[in-house]
Length: 235
Image (cartoon, rainbow, N blue to C red; front, top):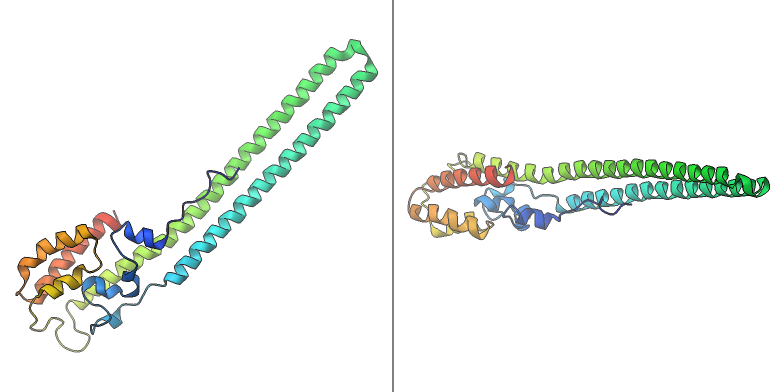
C-alpha cells in the first residue's frame, strides 16, 4: 500500500547543482563573492552545517518509513479481520442451509451474497481510509522537507546579504576596495563557484572592466547575482 507514497529526497549536492552551485560553497561561502577564507573578509561568513542538514534529512526519511509501515500494518490487520468475519459468516450460512434442507438454498444463497457484498464495502472503506492516511503522511513529510530545503536557500540568501554589506565597509578598518583596480584574478575569484553558463555570462560583463576601480566589479556582481537569485533560487 505504501508504494507511490514515498517522498523523493534530493541530496544536498544535487539540490545545489540544480541551482548552479557546488558543495564547496557551503564550506567557504564568501568565495562565491570573492571574499573567501584567504581574504580578510572570510571570517564574516559561517560555513553551512552540512552534517546537520543530512542528519535531519535522514531523520525525515526514517520517520516517513515508520509512518507508512504503521499505516500499511493497520490496513493488513483490518483486511485480515474482514476476511475472518466473512469466512465466519459464510460458514454459518452454509451450516444453516444444511440443516434447513434443499428448499431453503435460494434464501441462503442471497444471504451469502449479501454478506459478501457487505464485506467488499467494508474492505473498500478500509482501503479509502488507508489511502487518506498515506496521503497525509506524504503531505506531512513533504512540508517538513520543504522547510529543511528552505533553510538551505535562506542560508544562501544570507550569504548574499553579508557580501553586499561588506562591499561598502572594510572590516579591517579601511575602505573595502581602497585604491584597488580590477584584475582578471578578481573576476576569476567571483566566478569560481558558478556554473559554466553563469561563468560565461558574468565574464562577458566583467572582462571589459579590467583596470577600472574594484567597486565597479562589486556593483556589477551584485546586480548579476540579484538577477540569478531572483530567477533561479526564489523564482
